[in-house]
Amino acid sequence: MNHPLVSLHRPMNIAHLLRRSAQIHAPQPAVLRGAEPLMDYATLGARTAALAAHLREACGVQPGDRVAIYAANCPEYLEALHAIVWAGAVSVPVNYKLHAKELAYVLADSGARVLLVSPELAGAAQEAGAPATLVLGSDAYEAALRHAPIPVHDRAPDDVASLFYTSGTTGRPKGVMQTHRNLLAMTACYFTDVDDVLPGDAMVYAAPMSHGAGLYNYAQVLRGERHVVPASGGFEPAELVELAASVGQLTLFAAPTMVHRLVEHVRATGADPSGFKTIVYGGGPMYVDDLRAALDTLGNRFAQIYGQGESPMTITALSRVQLADRAHPRWAERMASVGVAQSLVEVRVVDAQGQPVPTGETGEVVVRGETVMRGYWNNPEATAKTLQDGWLYTGDMGAMDADGFLTLKDRSKDVIISGGSNIYPREVEEVLLLHPQVREAAVIGQRDADWGEVVVAFLVAGAGGPVEDAALDALCLEHIARFKRPKAYRWVEGLPKNSYGKVLKTELRAW
Figure (spheres, helix red, strand yellow):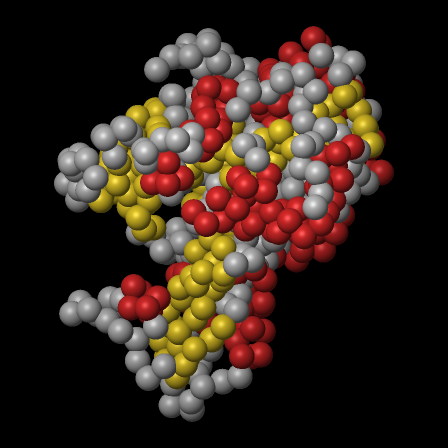
């Protein structure tokens, strides 16, 4: 599965994509805040090389050291991300919504040497006991950008480029080791399976740059096209419609809940969506009715991807052409699927023994190829469980039809996807059980029109009886990120369990 972007032997650092574009696309606009151009590719490359030099020479960052980014979307995010790998170090992008205690765990587990942080999060970083910090946009940061630049530090293709922390059923985040090879293969798959990047295109970062939206920066960098950070720093439908009109050829990576909100806005206002070029959706289930409405309202601008941090953005894809093929006799079924295997991976559906199941039968989705992670950071047990005989076991249940279209049936890890963010029930349950009046807790996701899913907690009270929701809210806010807090608490006499004592969450969902 060799590919021109995925060298098997020669040294490679994904930062070379920016170094190359800074040279051959030097005058092209690179970064915009809203519709306002901030810098061209020559400037972006120079700032990145200077910041990399500061990390190496002033902060003592050595090749292979970890440098974390804890920041909301901002123009500096892109140069900070590239400067880390430019210096030969490993980026650790942290969800800016995380609680200080959750940040503290990631920093400690990764052994981050430096933390790059946006100004509004500096307090949380201090509370987390962060190592040496550099506040993006501060006077110290601007001084760092005046450092004499250094060349890109070469790395081997299988050296780690990024540690992406994803929670597991144990509630403890695991650091996914994404290599330079993984990210280069992901970028190649974007062009072959998702979308092309054309002259005049622009990627707008309305979803967090620490996650999927940020990963798509490399394709845009490779072609020397524009990166747009909304003035709001996030997802506001009216703002995006205005940017589509003023910037043009806008590409957006969005969770299904974002697509739903954008469609509702366009329907309500009659806004012209022609400035949007491509909307890539993923990160959660897109219900068929919502997808029909999106296609009817915004037109043939959609592509879907299914991936995990362990195979970033690159398990399957449902292309614009496939979504537009309404004449196909199985169009409705394909709309409900997550598409076909991307070009640089193989995808199978297997039984409990790892053997492929017959066409149409449900099993666990497994994937192998150039995009699959090296393993989990400092976690050989989890690595051995997830990577078996060269295959990544996703924990997702699905069925594949005779044409290779994969339809997800369930998420065996019970992850809740709310507003595009993953929430693992176990970590919420463990916090709720800290309250002395909570004897048992089980957390599930409930479908929600705005958020995709919301968190609901079923609780069994101790001897003193139920407590007020406010007390449980306060407990959650003390320990976990706000977006993980249950939206509803339901007190029950007992939780449904099987003969082994396992809580039957399917029955809770029926309740």
